[in-house]
Image (cartoon, rainbow, N blue to C red; front, top):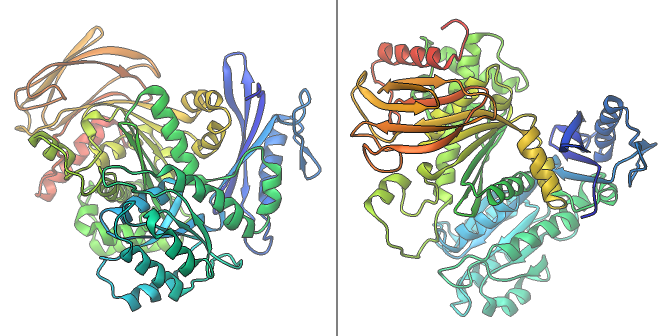
Length: 590
């Protein structure tokens, strides 16, 4: 890509359009100015470009750089005027909503679901021949959903065709209408190649049919790339083209518009690949929670569609259960009062905590939303179903499931995003939420997205990977520090580990948290000596050496035990929560 000196990127969200300006400085690329405005995809404006121009206008005003000539973005840049390229992502209008169908629920349908999620879609439902629903129920469900796009898969190449053909007949009988209008719903067939002609006969009349390579050509291999690329292409051609104002926006951009979650995922993937990391990321929003992971180079994304901190906070309480939420609250609260607080938040989703008690209850709910979304992610982020592989007993316990790719002992970094994490009053609160929800093991770096610019950087990475990566590590990431946590249980108060870090030495008792300050972005060598029953990745009782990264919080030795178990006695539990809050300096009065 030619040398870019000024880059403008917008993210058209469901409620807010955010614009950022990235400029090349002597030290490299930096994010310099940011503006935002309400998204205008719905009535009364019904033109997404209005919100885009308003957000860009704010960047123009703050930076003093002339970017707009009337309603036209000045490109390419001419000296101090205009920008070299303009890019955008979007989740306005509800993002990309897909229906996924596959022959076997835990094999081809699961592969198709991973494909759609990785492309940035919200999966409305997963149909399968063996999902237990009778044919008439499947047809009724398809008819009512009104998705933006359908992905049909099933069968290995050369295998039986009857089951995937049966699914095609259900789709043809239902004849669903597209959500945003238009003639036909785009339908991607990525199944057994031997069934292609029959699929054409059944579906080409009622759908905009596109055929690509099989997602699961053989049992032992997934081939998600071609179908994922086609989803992006059709998202632009069919879905975005129907949304108000997007046809004009598509003429402005210098590269394809990406769905917001796909852009976030691509940035995570790029960062993990370039740095050789196993990464875990989460974006907790008002209505949904997205979890991203890259382990061993394999990317996965899941959407927990009803786990959020405002619009769907009542669902967090319902799914987690009252007891699981209350276990994180360090003071007595009446169950009825808690339910009232949660309902009030649902009714008034834009409100933020006004008191310290409100904040602690919000953090309790956030822990459960993060935990539940992560549990759902682990179920989908698995090796290929139906493929047998040799595994040890330690694999069974560590991965909490037959084929999970998520191994917290090998996780190098956890990145948090979303209001409750990025805008927590104290950074230590964000770090504690991630530690409690994900229970990192061994040495794990933790960070939060400063102003939610990962979507902007993801679409930029498609154009200029170096520029996106420089801004990602310098301006996007706020380093919280490193968590060092051993696997195992012990006697409260008994020694859990000793450590030597630079010139300082110390020890930590089981049941305690110890924070050791380390300057922001600084690295230090550390040697940790766990007691006999504890494992930091080298085996029980074996010492481990490594590098730790400092941050706003520092290096945190978390010796509360893994898995983390809270006392059943309420007074003892609250006392323990207050002690941990003091050790992490979470709240001013404890």
